[in-house]
Image 1: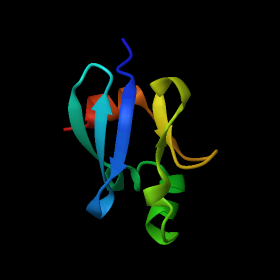
Image 2: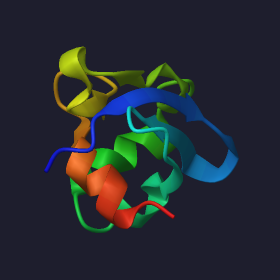
Image 3: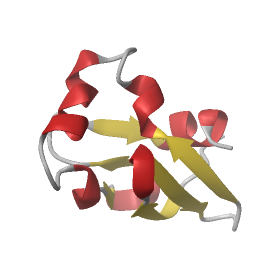
Image 4: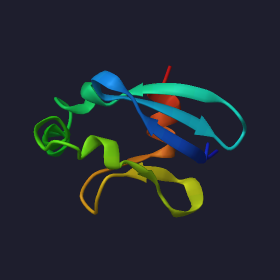
Length: 80
């Protein structure tokens, strides 16, 4: 089952406030993936990139650019 994303808001310390279409809210720590996937480390080195996060079309995930994205299932499963 997909838990589609309705909105995403960047917060301090690489945290995201996620609201899903079913009304549930979760916080997701993006810094936790810096060591899992090297490509995400750029979010900590390029000033302002982290704040450019947006919901993908259809709500199936979020993205920063063509190379950096997270699925709605990752956000739901590992968000708190």
